[in-house]
Image 1 (cartoon, rainbow, N blue to C red):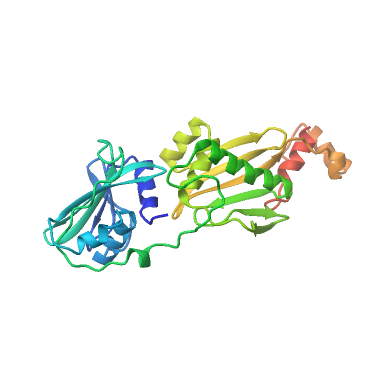
Image 2 (spheres, rainbow, N blue to C red):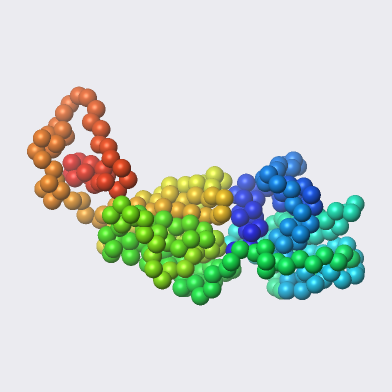
Length: 297
């Protein structure tokens, strides 16, 4: 995942007009005509070219090291949509602006070649880019996630969660799937880290429309999902500093009885109290919801 991807996600979710990168200034979000800082540290020219170089055409960096006009534009696509990046030198400083490609200038096919610029700056985008995971076993590409394949991928993880008897599935951008098994956090062996595009696609594939809107606007939403014959899952999807994340809790398809749980009669009698407040407490995964379901049933 390019480092700019999470900033583009922030721009879309906040319904902003653009992201502004300026040499020796902090990164800013342009919304409703006002600039809002979204980073603490100013960008050096090398950092600016490192960020833009990750998403530019293959010959982008070389073009900036040759002579020519001080302007360039190219398209870039993520799971959040199609964008246009415009780079220029103005008053002796480099500037880059990224906005949604509403005009469709670059969404019809191959990106337009970047125009060469006059400024010899050697930037290694590979050195500044985060490591990219190769051989992802998830059955879809990050740049064009297929919803059906995305749903298959997330359901496969949820089925595995139930098969292993784990209580929670934790998904986070840049990390392999993690399960809470008997109270311990365990990474799934053989599963690589999930990039933001595939992760967002998996979440959207099972998220109700109302929750999709809430997720876009608030970067956080709660919903439920059921795999018939397997289990229901309580889900929280969110966006954090590195990208998307989610936690799924297994809600068994069948209610465990009080006899199976070994709940004593004295505790069962709490169900018949007509006054007062009964608190069911305990750490994560200790069985609070299961106990309540058994008692209510």
